[in-house]
Length: 117
Image (cartoon, rainbow, N blue to C red):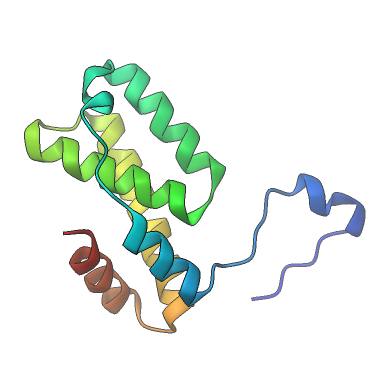
């Protein structure tokens, strides 16, 4: 896919290049579950933090959102807003991993699930 943007609008576009394989592997290997700080926040505060991370659009931030929500879901049920955010972040990651590794979406989903568990 090729996206064309006027040069004077590039800085304002919030677009970024798809990460490369070494960046993906580096982020995945350095990702850890955070302490209970996220769990001590109210649902609203935790949701806002995660939305802000997801909106940042970086691979690392999106992976953190998914990992945090998976960790929280193990202890208590996610509310509907968090579930929706989880699915959006997971879809974003699967699509990016699919592009990075040049594999199908199904293969990317399996790859991510193995790496995050």
